Amino acid sequence: MGSGIPLPLFLIIGLIIGIGLVYYILRLKRIRLNKLDEKTLLLRLPLLGTIEAEEPSGYRCIFVKDVS
Image (cartoon, rainbow, N blue to C red):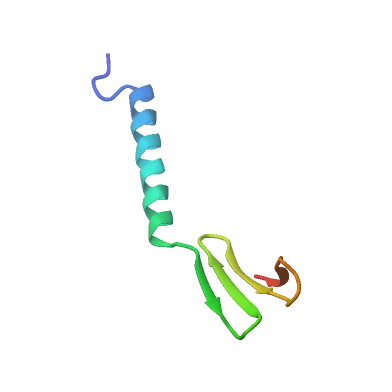
């Protein structure tokens, strides 16, 4: 009766476009790492926010100070 795009095809095209847009946005906004001082790191994560971490001497790890 109705002529036009069938609903399943419309949903598939929308899904493909949505995945493409999310991939494009995440490629533009990469994880950025800045050193505030000798021990403090600032990570900027796309869509999640920022993390301030401290790298203590003598350890092989990172301690997270603040998440926003």
